[in-house]
Image (cartoon, rainbow, N blue to C red):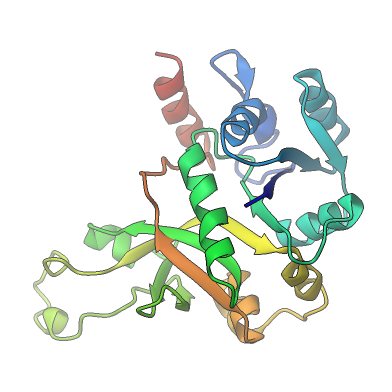
Length: 253
């Protein structure tokens, strides 16, 4: 089973400008992400960016870089431009590893690619992890996912799903039920190339716009997304200065 990793990296960031170039343990963040991806079984790892500063830094540590349009409104659009530039076949698998995930385990990258390869009726695959805290369950910044018995995603939401009605009938409840199956979505995706070409031809879906979740465009158009629990824990990525300091503490020991 062969797959390609693409790492989208943008210079602009509302909460942390120049994020991919922030230094961690003597290296820019994007280099850490690239090195983690290179530890996977991917046949090639490509950094996709629209910024010459990121391109220059990435080439300096030996990465393959694909320059993309500044007009893209989503990472999925950027990914589609990359696969088109590379001439990848419709049935090939591409894994999107976010450029702000310097601790993404190689096992997880392999897992999401293998899961997609194994489920022939799926166009896309992603991963999840258990939610143990009521605070996290209610947090709209933590995306929840529910799936059927075969690992086909039923819905992704910022709302707390599934809702344990009877458990919360008592308003004084402060914890989730024991062994409650709430799952937090992890933002790593594997795609069949054919889906990427379809995705950019679709209009944003109503549910996607309500929830601000791109993957709902895929489901709205009748495509199957496979979901499974990650084989190892996935440390959080970098969205804020506080996240950056947390990662530095881990990598600069």
